[in-house]
Image (tube, rainbow, N blue to C red; front, side):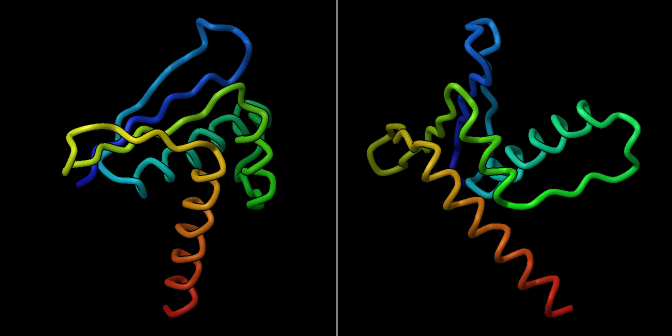
Length: 105
């Protein structure tokens, strides 16, 4: 388990800043996907199912004023900051792995 803190500021409103703690990078990336899915549900409250592409998810991430992941480094007992490009790379890797698993079932 690698502790990770996600810092998010979706709009210019400072009071909209928030954070969430996760136990791993994958959990954090899944949390970001869920955040986007909740956003889509608010925009489309009557829809029974929500579908989206990776490019739409990445646009959502890019529109955020700030999105940073702080990953705890056990050896130095410090946090390392990662930007949205790092987040998008990790999400892409996670979704690719999930697609491969679903394809092999």
